[in-house]
Image 1: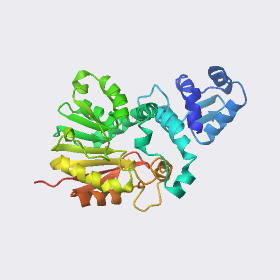
Image 2: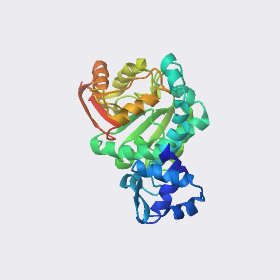
Image 3: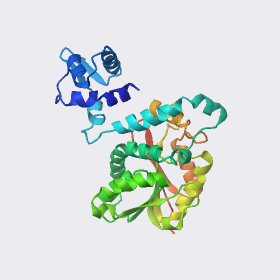
Image 4: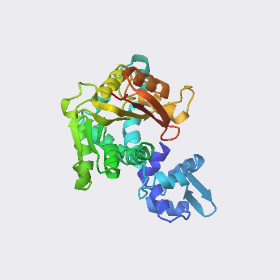
Length: 322
């Protein structure tokens, strides 16, 4: 909440505007038009959690804040915190005790039937997913591949980054209809040589997968999906992925996960807990669980690795050759 507050009042961007120099509380009061003592209270809290550094010259950004929470940074992640976490997940967190006891709460199909909710969530996710997709391209060799089926692909960020880096690839994105509208806007903003290779198919990964999704794909990508559906749907989703791949094709699962020891890391565990508020019947994932479902679906040569340190992991399985 403290970080979201700072994003809302623009403190990160104001301090970054000093080009590495420190800024006094008086300067911050002037720039934010908040002269009351509450601004000092906020700045003190942010200093306590190491988001800011305090010196005799004033306040400066920590390296991570400068990298991820300044709007002009190419690694800017603030929209995710400000919009999705701040305006959506926090609102649902208040119901977590009741959801935990009853198993009754909203799900993504319900949330994304609201055009405003779907648009806010999808826009919030986009910048952060672009950065994570670039990391995926460093971990997976897409050079010999020509088609990607991106299930629950949201804003299209992963498909966009993959198609930017690999001009031979075409991507198909399955998403809820209202999410498609926002995602198509991001795709249309790309140059034609990229946008023309990405198409959306409205639908849900929980329903029967339409024929227009195609078959014999080189990759089926499930990013942030396995933890967002009921536990009973995960196994079937991996079996459907297997059926849509060519022999030798890859299922790539990228999700929030904890370690197999089930004792951390802290961020992955807390994210999984808060997600119960919007997916009461879902799994808190860990790599060996995902691997087990993959192997049951027929995949082999399963490997896992870290993606966003302490938060998300990557599990990749291969469909055996014919």
